[in-house]
Length: 474
Image (cartoon, rainbow, N blue to C red; front, side, top):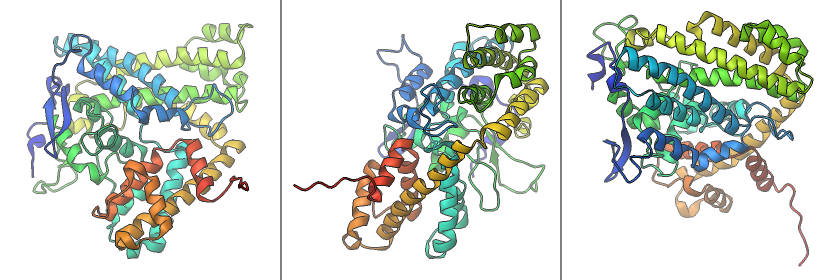
C-alpha cells in the first residue's frame, strides 16, 4: 500500500495549492501540470476551471433542477443554478479573507486571488451531481434501489458495499464522478479540472460502506481518480486512535479548502430558502424579526429595513439576508484563520465536522435557520405533493432503465427485448456496453437519471408510459 500520506501529520500550504490536472494519456489517467497557452497571461489555471464549469452542459442543466421548491411557477424562486452562483459568490469572499491571512501569516507567495478562484470554482461545481426534484429526488432514487435489491438483489452479482452506493444515493459522489470522469471528456478526465478544485469539492473523503449510513463523496468507480488526487496533497491519515497500530488501513482527511466550500453552501441556502418561503407566502416576515436581529447583530438596521415602505416583504427579506450573509461570511473566515493550526494537522482535520460548528455564534444562527426550515418550509403541503410525484416519476424511469441494463447483462445483445433495446438507445452517451460490469452499467443509469432536469424527467416518464400522446389519423 502507498503510505506516502502517513509520513507527516502536518500539511504544507505550499503543497495544498496545485495546478496539476487530471488527464488521460494513452488510455491511462495521469496528473500533469497545467500547460501554458495563449491565454496564460489573461486567465490563471483556476480561472480556467471556473470557465470550464460555467460553460458545461451539466452546469446549465442546474437551471432546470429543484433547489427546495419543485416546479415552481414563480420565476424568482431559486433553482440549483442560482443557488450555485450565489454560493460561488460567497465562497469567493470567504476565501479572500482566508487567502489574505495565509499570504500574511503563512507564506507570502500564496495569492489570495488564487485561493478565492479555487473555492469559487468548487462552490460553482458543488451541486453538479444532484438529480431532479432536489433532495426528494435523492431519496426517491435511494428508496427505489433499496426495494429493488430486496426483491432482486440475490440474483445480482453485486456485493453489499456496491449496493450501498445506490441505496444511499449522494449528489456529492455523483458530482465528483461527473467532474472527474463524465462531463465533456467521457471517461477521460471529465472537465479536466485542476486537482485543487476537485479536492476542494470533496466533503466526505470515503466510500459508502454497507455497515454505515454516513454520507460519502466517492464511488468506487472513481477510486483511482480519488486516490491519485488525495495522495497528490498528502492527505492520507492513519487513525491510530481507533485501529490497532499494526493495522495498515489508512484513511483520507479533507482538503482544508473544502471546509470553505461547505460553509459557503450552508450560509447561502440557510437564508435564501427563507427568502423563497416569504415570496411563496409560506413564512411571514413579521415573524422573523428577532431571527434577523440575532444574525445581523443590529436591531436598528433591521428596524430600518422593516420600516422601508418602498420594499415589499420579499425584497426586505433579501436585503436582510444579504446583511446576515455578510456577517456570517466574515465570522466564518475569522473562525478558519483562528483555527489555522487545526486545519494544517491531519489528526485535527479528521476531528473537524465542519467550519460552521467551530464558530459558536455562526453555528447558532445556522441552527436556528434550519429549525425554521424544518418546522415550516419543508413540510409545506404543495411541496410535499410534488415530492411524492417525484417518487413515482423517478421510480418508473428507473424501473425501465434498470430492467433494460440487467437484461443486457444477462443476455446476448441480439436476444434482449425490443423495448430494452429502445430504452438503452435513449441513454445516449450513457448507454452501457455489454462488456461492462453490472456495477458500471448501473452507474451509467444514474449518470443518465441524475443528469435530467425536472421537466425532462416528467416528459420522459410520460413518454415511456404513453401519457399525453395525441394520435391523429393520416
